[in-house]
Length: 253
Image (cartoon, rainbow, N blue to C red):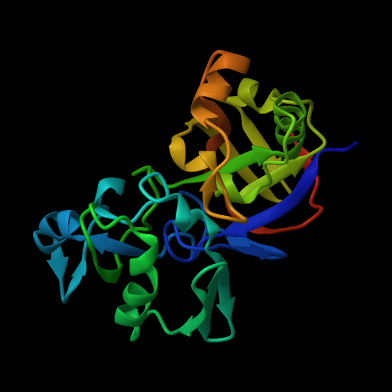
């Protein structure tokens, strides 16, 4: 099979939902547009955010510990959804569905998410849209994952894991399983776009949750280490030459 782009995934709110796209335009030295554009601060995160605010919004990148994250609440992993016209439409198996404008209805989202967040954890406070996109990494990278690697991992664990728990941006099909691990330092091309592979993606316990139920169904970090001797899944890459990409675009190594 010729390697090709099989999925494009975007997550408008960090750790809350996600959507599939048919096409998107990438820009050099920028993250995937609209990915992790919004995030929900916690009481702990407020101390960092208010020290770096301009006109009520953080004006610099903040670390992941400032926000609601799936590693602290498996239930968040079961939130699905993305843009539906001018509104975000999100759903959860226990919370039902909500439509909202994130620019004006942040408090509604906080109320909707509160039952999904541990009572003992620092409480969610507000939805913010910062100058930087709220990815875990400070660098302007996109994430690239392999469907072949996922298929092998599913075969070795004996369970369906799916793509959503990994919260990746670009999924490639047609590479040998885990061949992406050998691409660090190389430039790859997806359609007209060139990307320089920067690093492996180390995984955390958020990937242990079943995204259909929000319940832990595997110790993913331990499983990766046991099967492969590391806890990575996927790679980070920096866009070198921008342009439009679309599903089925050929991937050149």
